[in-house]
Image (cartoon, rainbow, N blue to C red; front, side):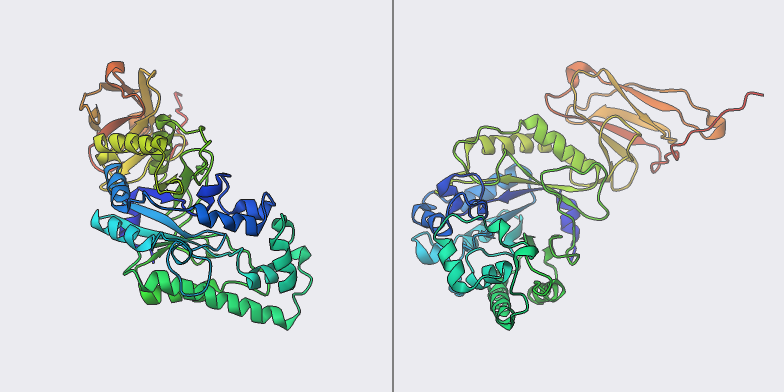
Length: 440
């Protein structure tokens, strides 16, 4: 159920962490599906996962200091390996190594820092033989044999390859899988206190074999009616989650962009293609301007260490947010497309426009269509006042013209400057069509 905190949060941290950090293939569980390695070879990574330097309290403190209001941890990726000591018999890091429970301390640390706690859970499970059998139409013996070898599973689980859908044994297999699916949900929802957000991922059901999402939503809210659920629920979630792509136009309702700090979700060790602070902060501003959140991903290594490059990016975002909090948290969707050259947001009262100026070379910028009188224009952070004037317009016809604002170049920031435009009264914007003036 959507909660006010989500709209107010604006910035969160995503953590992809699992045994895939050991192999350093940079594809999380996907090497199984793509046939880069066999399932059994992939599972050997369990032996190299140590979490020996896992410091959840330090993680949570870093997230808070970088301006995040919530964080989401991958409790179970598509490989079916859990970060908590599941009692379902599924592959589990705590049950098969000396790491101990990785989920409980994470949640405790977030709550201790006043952050909202989110848990990622993949619907699909590539270690569960019944699940893979239903998806592919193959018998258990065939699945187990294929798991020993490099297999392109993606080619097998498409609907066209499912040859035994009518076999009643597949209904029994799917019911067994759903029993495990719900049992694992019961564990993470029922044993750690109230969970603020559930972040679901990939579901690979068939026409006859689905995850019963409406029922699942009710199941989750039976533990906590305030738990927010993302959109990967076939229409039964609370908000949209575009991935690795900033929408051109804002989605309807609440939404969140999930974005990597580099080219992969999980730890690689060889990854150097990191986004710059400018790129990340600019993307955050685009989300703010369209009324959305940004969930920025990091990938700790097998010991639980967050790469220095990712820490640096988080801290740069935090430094920027600290100087511009007013234009981050208590804001809503800004001016429509076409009214300004830069993305913008409004304060909750609607009488202040925040313009995110992302290019330091500009000397001025403009906003079209504001009918209000302007009380003041200034730069957040420094407080430097900016002069402004109107160009064009026909006030007697209700045409306000264009507001031009000078930007003192020496006062602009390295990444993104925030121009604060204070209005007299709530924003009164022209419809954008303009008026033809008849001079006869």
